[in-house]
Image 1 (cartoon, rainbow, N blue to C red):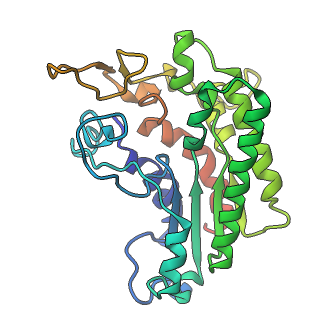
Image 2 (image 1 turned 90 degrees about the vertical axis):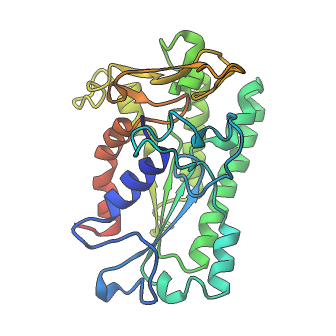
Length: 302
């Protein structure tokens, strides 16, 4: 199974940024951010795709499941509880009180990784107009926070678009994992278009759009005419490795008698998705294989 803290943090951040000893992500010493020493500061903001912090451990529930088996079974068999958000306001405070210095920010990279948690509330909204209106608010807020990061001294910002949400097991389960939800993917498409307009790379050269949508689609919903088949390694692209036996349940759920209320695949590497929304470690590797080149080019890393 995949451990969520390992996924983006390792593959999108450390794996991509820590190349040829040019870039490093770790607790910052006093002189961290000194380009003469080849170090760069890294700041991450986002939801569970980035696992930017921990929620407190509590009794097993859908929102605390990351603290319990089977999460972490491929990471020392120990769940780590990574499933939380960071706030730009807190980052601003760290800059203002001197915890993060302007010296740290001189050569810095911020990752704004949004996977769609804001859109959970739209699952029961039937009006397309209301969906579009809400997407407009979400993308406007993302753009606002990116500008705030720049104004607070961050040199470069990576911002991902939205993966094809309609192809996540959460939305493919009703069709027995036979196809993607057109409505879900439409929302992702609108989100990406809005965000692109609000953060135009020509006007804002310090921003790079990480194209998660294309990278995911090449695997879970590939174009038959494409020359590159990134999906061939996965026997299951739309169904999860860890699946609740209850359509309204969650991976790792247990009954009152302590029995598992979920099934677990034997080989997660054959599945693109680990649970109803998050990819497996193998899934993230396949995604990063497509993204690492463009990201390295943007950062000027060989």
